[in-house]
Length: 292
Image 1 (spheres, one colour):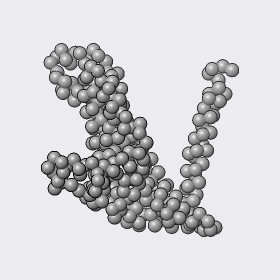
Image 2 (cartoon, one colour):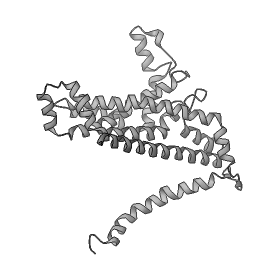
Image 3 (cartoon, helix red, strand yellow):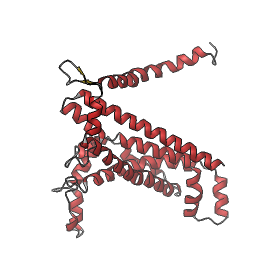
């Protein structure tokens, strides 16, 4: 068989295509079909038509979840992507950076449930380390019920997410910075550019494509956020940290509304695909403008 034959290409692609079809495509099509039914998981399903979608668009709690996840995404763009970029610039400027890279990347390798339980203990208002530290340094008035207050619960979750994933984005940006041509960097230094100017005016524009990908990963990943919210607050207090994924899980497994939960899943999937499409369109247009 020739390496360039179509049959060879098909044989190589077939295993991945089959896995995608059976693990992603078929379940998604099944979810779409189930979204038009009313089913509690036991009784015979009944036809609902667009009733589940009409209910979703008029559900105030479900609508508020998109507001919460939007705040979460905007916050993580700062505490994850921007902080990761700054950390990458700092680490890349060090001669012996391996230790710092590993130390900052360790939280990414930990299971998210373990991290959530750990930070739940840190935030605990009775025996948590955070309140204990505030009291020991004379800031006892700052002690707070971090996960039980509607004003701080979502921000507390955003901080934990930044602690975890800033190292992930640091690794991405560090790899991109290390691939930059040394002659350009050295020429800028010879021209008198300082490290800050070199980083902001030369290095960052040169890794623009990587930055765009990191932002897209952060946005789509934030829309799928579940484990931190579920373990830390379970959507509380008073639904102020409820996001689309936690609301879907409660709808299906707590309330037993499989049809309605499937409709919610379809809506969230469409929103994610639409965001990715619009982001790609915006990126292509900005790239064209730069080329001209």
